[in-house]
Length: 36
Image 1 (cartoon, rainbow, N blue to C red):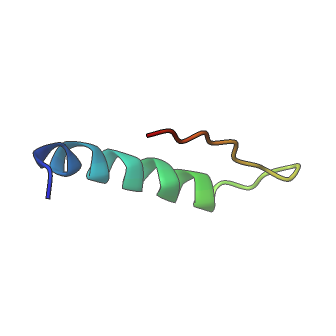
Image 2 (cartoon, rainbow, N blue to C red):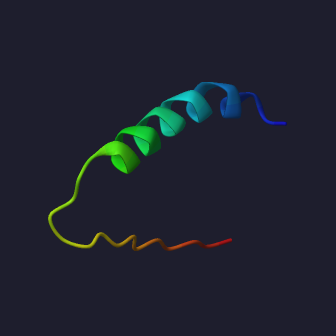
């Protein structure tokens, strides 16, 4: 497991939790681009 996972995972988990708990007036979407 890369060491940066330990740094980013709790932060991302917190942001995700806050996003899920918040009430959104409109639908939300995620646009992601991945490359190798």
